[in-house]
Length: 247
Image (cartoon, rainbow, N blue to C red; front, side, top):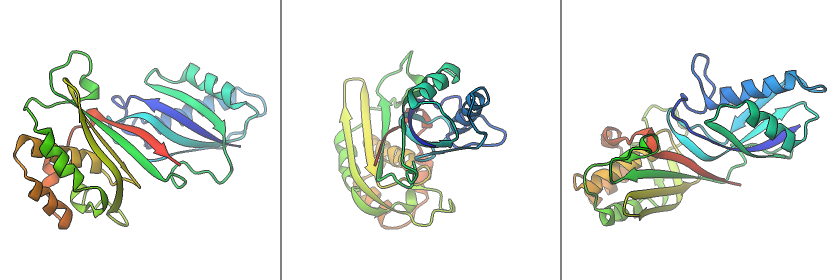
C-alpha cells in the first residue's frame, strides 16, 4: 500500500533529510519508526520504502515536506499517523497521511517546490536556529532588483557546486519575492526544482547586494557565465525552510 505523508521538522539536530549510514537523518528516523510500528502490528510486512520530495541539507528545516511510504499494513492512514507521532522525536511531526495511487512519487510527481529564507534584523533570544541574523542594515530595494533578474529559466551553475553531479543546471524560477517587517526579511523562491546549495547561495548573494558589496550587474554576471564567487557568500542553513511542494 502506498501512502502520501506531509510532515514538518526542525533540521537543527539532523544531518539532512537523506538516510546515511552513520548519521542521524530525518528519512532514517522515519524509516526506523515505521519499522517499529510494523513489527508490533498484526498483518504488517517488513518491506518499507520511504522517499521524500527532495533532500534538505544539514540544519535545514521543513514546514511542509512530502514523502511517499510503501509498506504492507492494515492500519488506516489516521491510525498510522497517530502511532508515528507517538514515537517520533519532538522535532519531527506528521501533519497528514492519506492513501495514494501506486504511481504517486513524492519527488518525480512534484511540479514545483517553494523555499523560505528568514533573515533577522536583530539579535534574538529565541530564534537563533531559525534565522540568519545579519547585523548590517540591508537595502531591500537593491535586493529586490537583483532577485527579479532570477525569475524565469536561467543557468544557475554559479549557485551550486560545479562538480555536484547535476545533469543540468538550468532551473525555471516561477516566483521570487522579498518582503519585510520591522524585525525580519523574508525571501521566498518557487521553482521547478533546486540545485544543491542553490537557495542558500542566492540568499547570500542578495544579502551582499543589500550590503552594497555586490551590484545588480554583478548578479547579472553570475547568471550569464560561471563564477565561483557566490560560494563565498553561502548563507547558513538555520534560516532555510522547505515551505511547500506543489503537485
